[in-house]
Length: 83
Image (tube, rainbow, N blue to C red; front, top):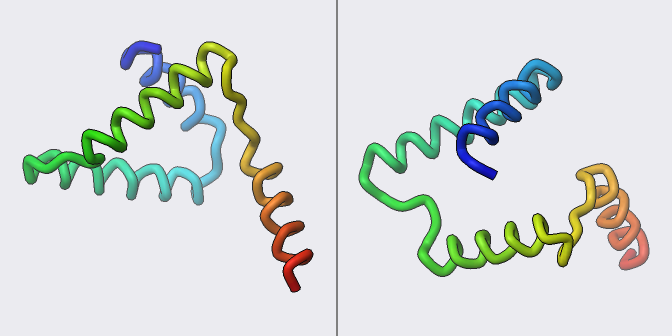
């Protein structure tokens, strides 16, 4: 996915989410801009490589992802089991 496509998709998402998510997104972007302005990298080269590997696997269908709701339910279920 190109940067232009991602920006377009994010604009669509922004119109659909509530204020809480917009605040989180704003903080993430501001933090990223501070790092960039300081001339630092956000991720180590190893982390960047791993993220790119996972993105490629996801886009090729080799790896799947769960929604946040599914992940939350799985975590809560595991916590209950451990008690």
